[in-house]
Image (cartoon, rainbow, N blue to C red):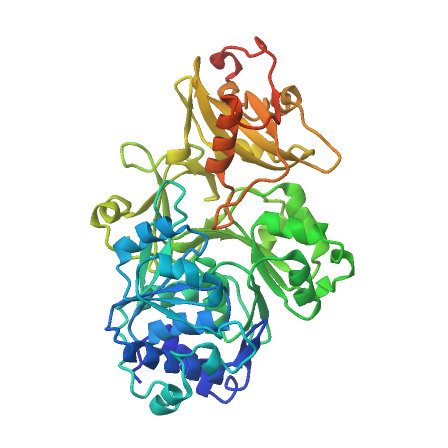
Length: 537
């Protein structure tokens, strides 16, 4: 094989080395693989994909649960010079067809759990019927990873190594504003991104990473492919389940990554108190704002863990974060500082950088950023510009470079002619001692154009009234940013990417406001509001 800096080449090097060959790389509910076995299985699937009639650059869509076979198929596609494209298996058939129309897949690889969705796409489908069974990996990946393929090629021997600038993998955006778009990474940008993750969140070969996220999300890179690149083990669970995750932690899984809601679910589980949490050495959280109490709880509950928070996007992977030392110093909010190699600028309407404390457009440039939206040249030109990637986030920064996300430009609420960014309001509300979680959104209003509302999950056995919340917010928020209505929720629904589903909460609130949905709100008394400008500091 060549010496190109690609993930398959690196995994072969680990698998053939004296220290890595017999070290476990992956485990799931049905088996495990050493690095040597992983490299062989990857190359066997690569040969199988090419023998199925695929050509260099063809898209290989996967509709599968998180598993060893799913990992091997993705790596096999990379090794064959094909383009892996994990599919959001939560999409409906019509949604999947709309997304894949742009990708024009050569094949959809499916396991039994998602075979029906795969066939609904109208694409050619190859089913891995034994993917979930306790069998050797060649059987679990058959008909692609058959024994004959594995023996015929000998760890990549007959495969032509892809160039570093060749297309490698496509991640779907969250699709919160319509049909998801596929962000393309080359072999090189993927390699650089995984190295950034490995250096920014250091690992040792003895580490066991617990993975329970869907593969179509960029966490596939940050906490599955990056640990493999670093020579560590990944323990894959099909989905997040607090009891299963705690059992894995008790048995030695020591690295965790997830949204704050997932860690809250761990803490609420009956097995939490008896789980050997001293095993946990690293925690990384992101996806949503967090409270001071949440972070202090992590520091207390996982005393041996170095805790980090990160910020990234499908378009450019991980680009900002803050470290354990920042948390110990009491810095719990915002998204931290740019990672080495990432250039983060905040621009005003004139395209110039704004002063500290002023909200502007977030623009990110880094060597590992994506290379545009596959098959969508106009959308690519709008987002991936010469000066960096413009994803539509609004942000500000302090004098010492600490970045705060205000919200997305498309989520902005225009109330009385003033811009309100939901995340800015959420971060204030989350400081209230009786608020466990919150999502802020705007609804049509005859007087203000839009009004600010908040869906709140209260701390157990507590409640939060509207006037109490408005009084709490008044010290930190201008009057026009303070919610005019509060809806009490049991939980904040999440998108497929495990982020708060603002659209769904807003739709439920709109249905309630128009008399077509369930009640559950704390309305402000009529006439109690002051003119918008009166509350401004």
